[in-house]
Amino acid sequence: MRKPLIFSLFAALTLGPSLASMAAVAVAQSLPVVTVQRHRVDLTFPAESLVEAVQQATVGAQVAGRVLEVKVDAGQVVKKGDLLMRIDAREAEEVVRAATAQYANAKINYERSKTLRDQKFLSPAAVDKAKADFDAATANRAAAGASQSHATIVAPINGIVARRHAELGDMATPGKPLFTIYEPGGLRVTASVPQYRLKDMRSVKTARVEFPELGKWIEAVAVNLLPTADATTHVSQVRVSLPLLPEATPGMFARVHFVVGQAEKLTVPAVAVVRRGEVAAVYVESADNRLSLRQLRLGDAVGQGEIEVLAGLASGEKVVTDPVKAGIALKNPR
Image 1 (cartoon, rainbow, N blue to C red):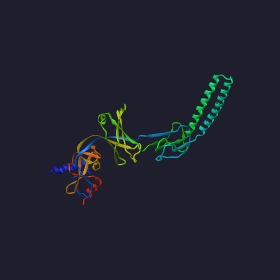
Image 2: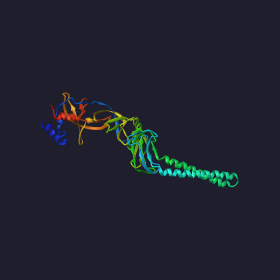
Image 3: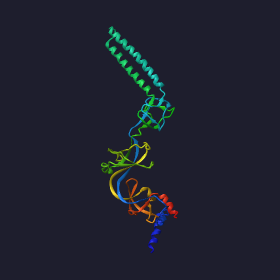
Image 4: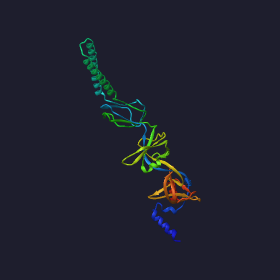
């Protein structure tokens, strides 16, 4: 007759005051419940990943100059050819004038050289030199004109401005990034998979992508294991294509769950589990609508937002999926 009492005291000391009420009961008050049953679930293994754009462009400066005008900011939608920024091109304009003057002089000299050659006053070698000078001046004029056009920064693709790297008044230099633009319709996540998982990964065709911040699970469009491994970390990259998801942006954290098989298991929703340190429990509703907190031994995460139950529950029992409301009901029984 003393064993139950000893067990209760041991449970209270071991689990702490938050879970010592496991033996307490309260009448359930219209709480959301789910009946646990053994069923076939997908066996998965998770891998942390980041969202990235399939098509992304970093627009850089090609001429030196001060930023005179900024037309767009981060988050704006742009079309290919839209004006993004203007850079002070006065130095480039002077280079164009000099190149134009050099071109005009070289052209006149070449035309004069041809006339003198026809009159037998100039050698063919001298005409060839005049022709080479004229060709060089033509190329310099074209290059100077192209440099001047680079002072006007336009969008190279249709997309969304992810980041603006320069402000009004900043000094732009060749190679300095000015804007990052990505196409929102094509997003993917890239996950790193350790080598011991590669054997399973070669047959994986299905994956689910979890976005914890958004509270969403998305079915992957395609799974592509890259054929190389990093020599330092010994991991391989796996690219998982996503369907259209307006809320997702490049750089966002995501967790990929690769489906490696199926099995029949008893599971509970992950949202129903209460954790106190290493102890896990769920609120169980009995047949007479009474509520109790029961400790479980859990396995791995399976399926979509489910956790395998190794011990503590039987098939057919009802588990409350809102532990916060269940805890309030247990503390304030009617």
